Amino acid sequence: MSTFHCTSCGRAIFRSEALLQRVTLSSFEGHRAECYAIREAIDEDSLRRYDVSLHEGWYCCRFIMMRMVQDKFGTGDDLLVYSDAVVEVADGQAPPALASRGSVVKLGKRDHDAVISAPANQDKLLVVKHGAIWCPPCRHMDVIISRLIERKALPEVRFFELDTDEEPEIAARFNNRAIPFFTFYYGGRQVKVDVRGAHCVDGGIVGAIPEQALFTFCQTLVDRLGKPDRRTA
Ligand SMILES: [Zn+2]
Image (cartoon, rainbow, N blue to C red; front, side, top):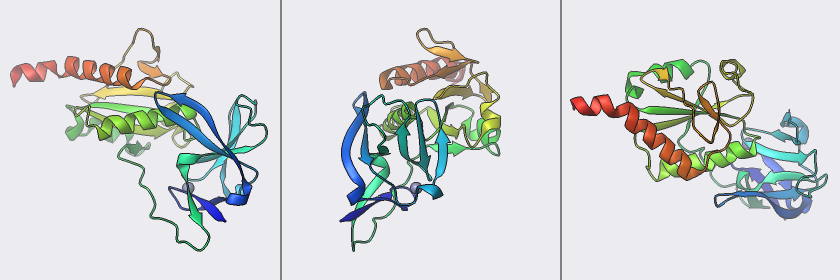
């Protein structure tokens, strides 16, 4: 017997006896959103609640558990827990050291504008992903962005994230209500983009972006914005 714990905060989420099956909710560019279907959680009431059109759920520091309100994936009333958000610990064993959230800096209303205007960031393209931890396309983008950072594929780009639930004031600066939503900054100002084939609102891009497309788009933007400096160098 064992207990599954949150990989970020370590809290116990469900017991192995509650495990029904493992399901794949979606697959996007090699990243599969794999979930455990479970009967019940250990202490659902102490988790934070959310409710959106297709699903409802509960989470702690990182998205933990949901239930499809429309049975899109044939999972019925089962609770779904993303497998990459939990770690199994056998009874009698000590929980492992907690995983870090990676190197994407999370912005809040106290530091959002300061980070954009910081002197050290003036010659970098800053990409801010507005999203929420319960949003599957946002999670896909987290994986893609982590890959680009690990590969050091875009040294002139800095990625940030903004939780739209925690920071509604900044999210409300844009005429956009969908996530993920990407905004771009260079030299202390927003770079408004209008990309053919993408849904753009208020100079930002709405929706998930394939890895290669995000890479090419950022690199093209960096090349264009960085040109005057390069000429004088
Ligand atoms: Zn947690």
